Length: 576
Image 1 (cartoon, rainbow, N blue to C red):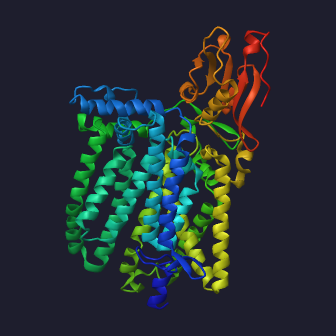
Image 2: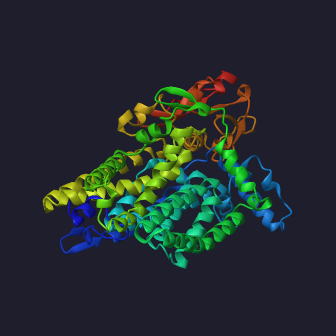
Image 3: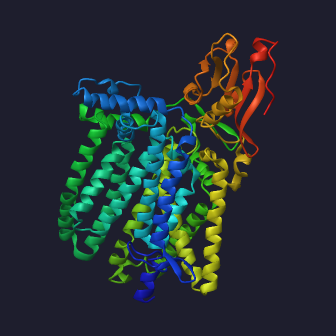
């Protein structure tokens, strides 16, 4: 096989920064819009969507504790380091406070409520994630791949739905994504990365570590890729020069590590209280226990003894079909490249072209993204750590998966375009139609997008009773609004507020109920019962059903009138 054939075989995707997509993304007559312009317009539209919809999302279990934690970290600063209650509050000191500290600061000046401010901020952090996917996809495959990456990430309901109310997992995922963006640039610039790149990498790495200590994984990925780089360097220039290059790279990266530590301790001051505190957090989460159960494929599973297939299975049935198709194409590209590489002479290294190390080096950014997407999944399969419902603790693998899927789709579109302009146009229409269909499916679930399941299990309808759906009680917000609509400003005959028993986190409903309601812990005096349907909670207390929060044929929350049980002479409200 000739040298150029070998090089083409081992390079199934464009090298980082090479633009192979058409210059124009959308064209209508004399009007045309570049793919980068499409991506920018999409980001602006996503930000407007956040502004228009952030009030619709509910208050979930963790938010009150996280909000208190953020205010406690702020109090440590405002008390000139004397109020150290943040370091003993529940177990949250094991988490960084990057999101919560900023949210606490914003709430000092925000005209919105505590949780409305947090939801707006969370949604905008999600938009930052879309921007990161665009920049990474653009660098790896060109403008079209970048636009596809941002679009696919937006269409993953498990990312977008969580963004508004998940104060740990989505901010961590976005920080890890931007760390990956700068890590790819850093690898591209070896052996002498620019100082600006090194400092940017260190800053976002510090934010990742200051959100969850799991950000140290990025150093693992980068270390593996740097090791591969040095092996290739040694192949070309010998051991002595490779050793010198290793020293130069280590010295160049030192400012990034120093800056990352500084940023980390600013937003996570507990890490500064003792040198080994970050290590304590890491070991704590490596052996974290939670006695709950999760529901998957019709089985109730202990979170302490999850089967190896739990996480890959959840990703398989919760990622949209268009993303799965892109990942399948990316996998086929990788297998084709490996097969061609083998045929080119991998078993006979001495016969490989002299340019092969350069070609392999150009694949290192792709290897970095692939590690970010697949290494955590492999870790779960190997060690089966305890995780909660679905893949929410592993949301940070979703953005790199979206980028890989975009590269797969982009490459597939390029292959089809070789058969003519009409074939390329039809392929583009198919991809855009699939993305449009996914947008419609996600919109039908609003603002409960995170309960999404794909057609492999029959959608949300097929998942009901077989998988956890609204495990965080997001639908209780809508249930509380429904109760407000039914009762209005009316009070009880004795002038006291109506008592509402909530199955779920009480504040998830109480925060949205009017002043003529109060929550109760006792079914004996509860006038109304509002419950989410997880664990059949809606069936625990009797009453007349007067409202349901539904998406399609699936009920997410139930509202019951219990006044007749307390005072039989009162008339019942009609069911709705």
